[in-house]
Image (cartoon, rainbow, N blue to C red; front, side, top):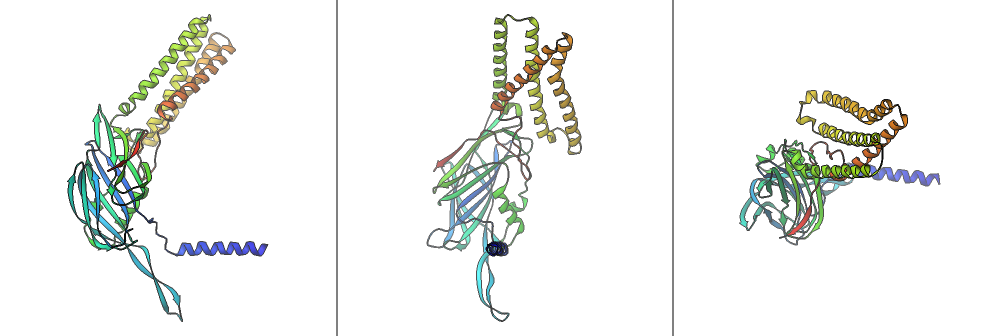
Length: 405
């Protein structure tokens, strides 16, 4: 039994060793699309797109046709070919007698020539491939373009609908990461961008190996932001993502703010009605109102503390961010302690009735739970969803659909 276990461990070790030595490119086979989309105040979208193209036909592929919705300005278009490499698979007397070709990590890039024409609300691009793509071979097409027509502005809020590229192939996967420029807010959080496409914008070449382009190509696959994915699209179908952004957090949240105020007002009216119908002492009314206001204040203080911490970079320089965050935590902690224990201590000491103070504390906890549930339902949580480097940007409510052209 021990020999079998040892033998199994040895086999596993050898398999892991071989798999670590053999080339294992991260590229996936098939037809896929990946996007990084950045919106700005001028209602323009800057789009970095990667199209994984596999020739599933029987003949060589010399051109590639796509349709892009909107008013397009193509900045640059590049195609990347994975190059074949050789390795020895059989040695004889210190001399290789049999070689094997395989696709490794090396890639060469060519600037794409293309023709374009406007067809309805779309722009059709025909890209001439510098080298034919043979049957079952794959290439990567990298596009960087600016597009108008995806955004409508209404009362200070930008409503966008991003649409992906249509092509004449079945698509296994589409991934879209949405972001906005600095100083704008996506619904659900503050976006912080950290991108630089200058190298790609100015690239011109034929058969050039470029680590920068390889990094740019790979980054589009996993870049952060608000990410939506779909799969299994037919030829000439595309994918749409809707959302909103603005300069003002209040404008993005106005419906939820008004809704929360309405709910709190209704709760207060219901509470007033119940207490007025109950023949209780005036002190009970004071306790109920105090616990109500205390719990409501705690929820608002807690919410705005998280908002400030998520967006501290918008208010102070990076040199003072840590100081202000520590100061905010101390101030908020002091306020929370006062709001939680203050009313109970006041009534207990003022009326020399410990039971009254305990009842006020319990009432505050009950109201705190109620208000917390209301805020979570309305705002989707006390803290906005934050995505860490390289990019940060989120949407809270996004609708996704497929469109058939």
